[in-house]
Length: 317
Image (cartoon, rainbow, N blue to C red):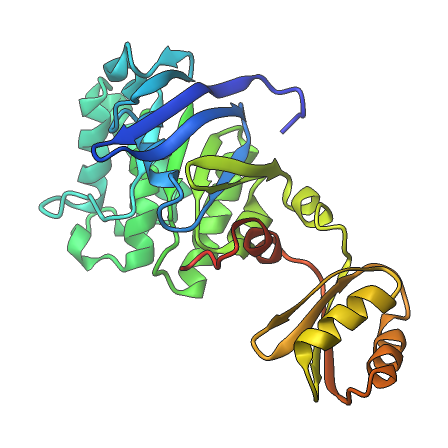
């Protein structure tokens, strides 16, 4: 995706207030570029589902505006449905039909001729690796196959934007990788995708940019690498030691050159720092205050680290 790609979704001070004065989304200004995979991360109750609901016309905004594929979603919701494709969290396939019938009749519903719908059905079944299952009943599909069929159905009418809401939740690793490959292929031909996910590695691998949302607001937006760099640390050291860990964390933060943060997490000191030769300096500093280091491990900052740092909670909470 070129950095100067035009915006295909824009929101301006978008708000949703539910009865009981519950502010689910607050003054949301968002811009999604044509051709990008835009990742949307947030803990339960952050406002993600409400935001997606408004952008896909299922939820009416309390105030503000949103333009999706050139269409005002509030003024022209029926027209907006023509430019979007949605894969929800739940299986919404017609179980009374075969695999190919689910696609064929979806195409007819969106105004395709019978010939066009047949051609697109064959094409898409190949794209999502289900050509050999065309005549199979939907009930015979595995979870991963059903999810791939829902992706095919969502892009049957060639929407400008594809919304994927937790598309790999509950899938086994092999099915998840198969769906990743399909998303990357769609991305390669210019499909704009808005992806919500609970899997950090999914956002890290697939998304051009990632937005982290909590309490109805976007807290950070950047590439996955940019978000990691924002932590001002290139190394996280996990330290097991004897003695008062709270005092050790404070001491290491004050005395270890390059340290930017230190806290006690799950019975270990977690030290965030930049620079080389950290481990000898940590051991020397700990011994200087009488603490005996029993174990050290090192990791790089991850997208999950960024998420916890911004929201104070794990994504799955």
